[in-house]
Structures are given as C-alpha cells and as structure tokens.
Image 1: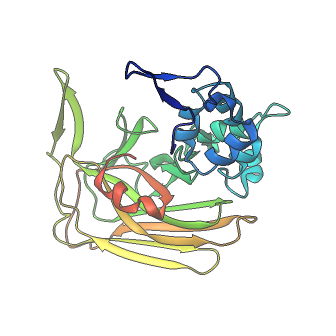
Image 2: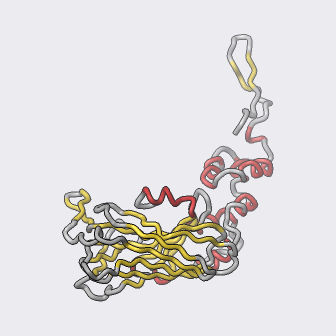
Image 3: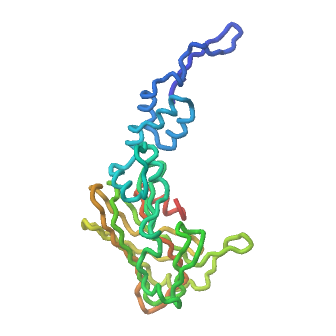
Length: 290
C-alpha cells in the first residue's frame, strides 16, 4: 500500500514508538480509501476490507464494484438470477453473479470469474446434440464427480461421430475462447484411487477430430486435433469469437466431428463445452478445470 501512514519516533533508549496522536490507516476518509482500492482486483478488495472500519466501509462502496461488474450486468441479472432482493448493493450483485448459476433445465452453468469479472459458461453433454445418443449400444450417460454437471456422455463405439451445440446469450463485450472438455478412457475409483479404463479406446489416432464454430454476426473458426492423451481431461480448442455489442445476444453454433466411416472409434468421455474469456486460453489448456 506504499508508505506507512504512521510516524515513528526514536526515543532516547533507541527503541521506536508510535505517537498516540499519529495518523493511521483508520484515519483515512472512507471515500479516499474507496478511490484507492477501486484499482485493485475483487479478491484484494475483500481482503483489505478486513483491516479496519474505513476499509470495510470502502470495500462495500457501490462505485467500486460498479467498475468490476460487466457493462451489461443488469441484463445478466435479469437473465441469470431467479430472485434479486430490492436495494441490493453492487458488491452483493457481483457476489451473486460469481456463484455458479444454472440455466435451461440444468444443462448450462454461468458465472463470473471472481478475480476479473469475466463471464464463463459451461454446456453439459445433455445440452448438446449427439448423434446416436439414444442407442445404449453406442452411448451411455454416466454419473461422475469429475464434471460440474455430475454426468458425462461415454462413447463405447461408433462409425459416425458428430456432436453439435447451440447457445444464445448476452455475452459482455470482449474476446472468448470455446473448448470441448474430453477424456479418452473411462475413469473410476478403486480403493480410493482414481483409475482409467482404456478398454474401448480406439480409432482416434487414424484421423483428426474437426472442430468448428459460427456466430450470428458472421464469425467462423475451425481447428482439428488428434486425440491422444488417455486418462486425462483435456480442453480442445474449437476457436475464438469477439463480442462488441453487449446489449444484444450473440448466437453461437459449434460442432465436433470425426465422420470417416472407414474405421470405428470409441472409448471417449464427453463432459461439456466451455466458454471462457480468451485471456485464460493457455491456462485452460493446461488444466482440467479453471
């Protein structure tokens, strides 16, 4: 926080002491403190709010949290939150939006990143259109604690692999990256240890999987990747899109395909599609979850 606000004196014994009349952090005007902490990240603001009464009051100032909320936060409140008490402060609104909120019958989860206020979204496998999902010879929905949705779609074997998704949402202005969260092999626990069954893994090394996305304002991205890391949840990057107008909804269509019918493929867990601010792209690629 810079220089100390108290004045130290050296007494004749060589020991330092603090004058009882010296100014301290608690003497700073609350409005001054609020102007300073407004430059900090939300977690830092909350920590400083524990210092004293002035910092505690400043850490609840509406104008401090107004700058941390997305520009279209009122639209997000109406879209995401089922109930909002009257006269709710901006810090409380920020906190409620940072909580994982469920939409569309539990198939989507939306929240703000606590550190940056960036909007994040996850779409479950049950919120995607999966070719052959109703035929239990090929696909099964499996309960698991390794998913935000506590369920994944598991592919035993298929000739034609195709997954499509669609979402329309008032994303705040910014750049976003879209990923499929996948794992080769089926995880389970034995004697408290995580193990991965690779019995059905085959066919993914012959041809790459193709990813694509389209937006309602004409953006298009494509990529392809060979799946080759069994037993590990990975985020496979579909592409990025930009939002300039946060006052209207952006519609996104996406797909994942491997439709070369010269061979079968199987042993794949499909958890979800995730959408994060693009500045987290590299970090998300390295971790199973952010």
